[in-house]
Length: 225
Length: 289
Image (cartoon, rainbow over all chains, first blue to last red; front, side, top):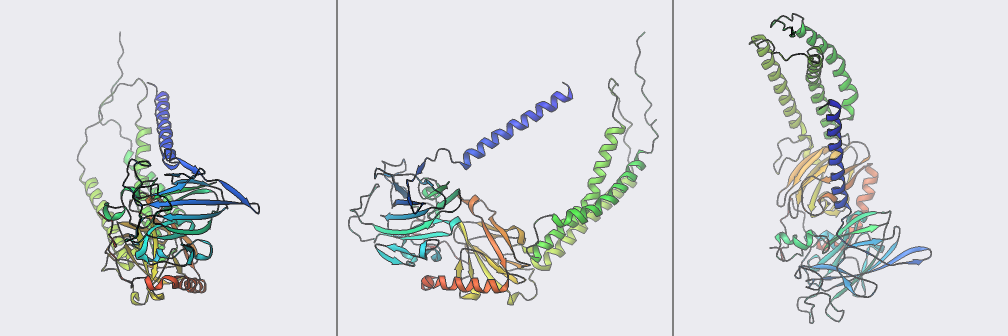
């Protein structure tokens, strides 16, 4: 075989390999397979405003997951149903009003520093209707955190002896829960991960396996565009 | 009548190949080595955000300049051989002259490579023992710079999946960002709250593993104001690739204002913060398996 033909074949193989690797990486970074949820956008004074309603549950249940015992975040869709989607499409430079209904008990923060709300308007949140600038780290059930925004909000848990605790999601607001509200702002377009910092994965090493390491439960993305 | 290619008698080629290669190598090395040291050296990694980072740039420059003549020798040798001894098309394959032992070449090769390797080992050890070169030295550091007792102390805490920082000299406050004052000696106490991470502040020349229950000490002296990247260099789970931040070296006055602001912000949870410790074990473990 001529030298030029050999060179052409090798170059073609290298290009083909590069394209395949590119597709693989692109597939990973765009998280194909992790269905996203587009949150409805309203306008206030010409600027986008989003109302985000989410809930955290101790066990996601068989209706919503093949892993019914996993702890999870859920988001409320436009029909009022709770769905298990953790990749959320948000507009850039928007005001996001968040309401979290937490039905889970406390696990405690491994890093007490994260008990202070950060990256939210006024550096404070509203817990069950009362303003708060921090919680007891031992009472933390989960956090909603977007590190790229410096956003961290610790969510206090339902008391261990509370009546009417939710077994499996979706959980009705008639059951024991805590309500946490806060506001933050999206910035430039980008792909920002969010996560829980509380070691809340029951039965996993250090409480950080399973649902803590799987997008769709305690981790996700803010797809800001 | 068939014709056959003529075959030269072994050893018939009396051209001074060795001398040509050596002369070409010497000329190329004498030109290339200073160019590498002067122009390539300053832009070699990791950067100049700290004295330790600059020291590593010097180390890399010395290494690169040292291997330049070696690279030149290989280059000259291959180019010479491929051009001078390239057989013309349709030439019959023939064996070369038999290789013979040459004591001079062997002794020279062994002596030169031994001297190069031992010199680099000695140079590297000297550089490492000067101030640790920004590397994590474990809980009992060996290469302790002078005045370490009076250095500014910053604890680096890794957890899945973010870095936070405690400043024991400022009431043990904790922050999401790493701010360091310019031209300041700093001791970093690197640890983890869960699994193994690795604190890698590239431009600072600092890389130190973060292990739960271990205080990994690294020293540095900051230089002028600038920003630098921080990454985790130990695969630590789902968001390992997202475990990066931007650190800042700022003027002394700006640092003083920033740390005061952080102290104010930390007031709301001051009563909950644990007493400063050199290390922490994963706790709580209420749901851990």
